[in-house]
Length: 192
Image (cartoon, rainbow, N blue to C red; front, side):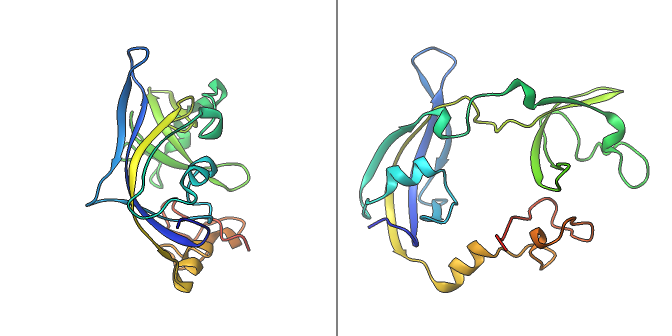
C-alpha cells in the first residue's frame, strides 16, 4: 500500500485544459517503459498528488484532478522579466547564444543564491525576456493512470533523496555560493 517511505512505480497520462473550452489535451505521459518512480512522503511530488495516491495498491487505477492553486499556482505576470542582454554573456564577453535562445529553459541564480529555471521568451539585440512561472502555472492537472509497484525504500535510496550528490560530488546547498560547482544548475538542498 502507498504510504510514506514507499517507492511507487506508476504510469499516467497528464491532461490540461485544451484550447477549446471544456476539452483537455494530453500534456505528458509516464508509460510502462518510462514510468514515474518516486518515494512517497519525501517531497518529490506535489502534496496534492501524494494525498490522492495514498493508500493505493499495485494494480489500482487512478483518475484525479489537482486544482492550479494546489499544483503550481496561478500564472503571475510579475514572473515575466526583461533583463539586459549583458547578463547573459559568457566568460569570453560574448552573448551565450548556445544556451540563451527563445524556447530554452536556463538555470539562473536569485540574489539569495537559489537556482531557478527560467523559460526564455524573447531575445533581442538589447534584452532577454524570461518567464519564471512554472510551465504549468494556472493549469489544473488531470491524472489518469495505474499503480504498477509499491515497495519499501532502501536506506540508500532515502539517503540519496535526503542528501543529494551532484556532478561536483558535494551537497552545494551547504555553500553560500556554488562558484566552484559545475552541477549546471542541478544542485538541490540537502536540508543541513
